[in-house]
View 1: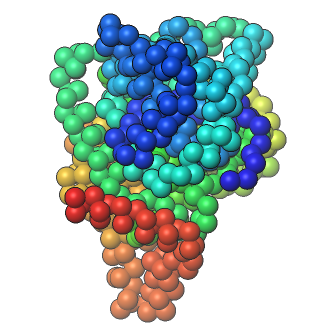
View 2: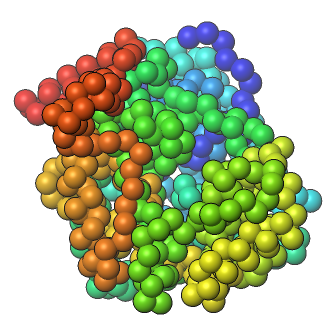
View 3: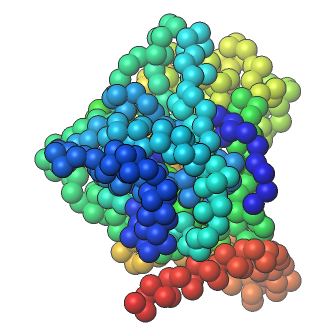
Length: 515
């Protein structure tokens, strides 16, 4: 392993308290590290017998080493954020499966003292609404990396989601990737609980929801999901603030949760997780599931369609196409994308001003869209409302989070159907990715889902033809059939690294099956 750059606080992820393993290599590593400590240090790590259900120091040491190993295997420069506040670890929380306590700080400090960790301290931003704040960061030192090199296990050999709660109740809203969005009033952040404790008796559907999602996560764990053209298993994307971020395309980022917001079981509830929710639509087209090409099918303007159905208006046309150019600096295709985002933002907002501000905030730094004035955005929104007057009352109504609950019910119906048939499916809220041969099944299931949940068949659309559609071309237009078949169903390039990753994954799962 070559030398790596100093820790960058922005290139990090939080400590994962749901990693565990009984693998002999892991136990041997923990024993090795533990035995390098002095007797006094070892006694301090072991802890006392009256620990009152808290994880022992040995457990904490093991968890930290596993998480550092996963981070190192994922990206040698990736650091782990560790909260050091007394209230950061609630031992009896349903979101803390290993009963991690604040004592983890003592174990981390010992590892730093013994030169097993590189670290930087946290930072508290008092002037930028907390945006520049960050927790302490840790990363495996060169000394620990040398020990890691002796391990032969891959991260997916480990139990990456040990007893992890997959049904989340939060006070916060989320963005499209499931990151919690803090509510800011004036210059201060509203202090709320991110995770809300609850009892399964709080909602009669909780047990079945959790059981269904656990079955789905088990299916994903056994499914190989990758982009064949990638040599290294990651892509780099540019964030809206101009920074870049590395998104890992591997078998450790497939765990899916449902997150309910604002402390309510009837708000949000969407399915979050999986690297496919962090990459562009163009990259999603390149995803293979179990070495088979895929098709993504979307609902057409789902939230607007649901609201229209509630008003008794059933229109399968493209609601975001205004049929004429409103702002001369944008072509019709660009305008449609802006109208779509603006309308969805307005449905979520409480006022036009907040909708326009949120729209601009979501645009890439330096883009023309980010420079749009309120009056220009108002012009787009007014034109949309004039075209669809029955939706006027729903604009700036804060109904988005309620609609997210409705679309989560639709998605639950679809995922449960595919899981029952043992067919992998990936969701991006109102769109779904399946193997090409399962496209027609998906469309039928999407139709049935909206009939069950909304009471009407809401139209779906796809950019890539399905296997069945391609086969239908065979006897109608053979040249088009051959061209489309080669374009969609035949991958022109599979990197050697992809083929090796795939082979390693299958060999591991074959060995697990034979045990």
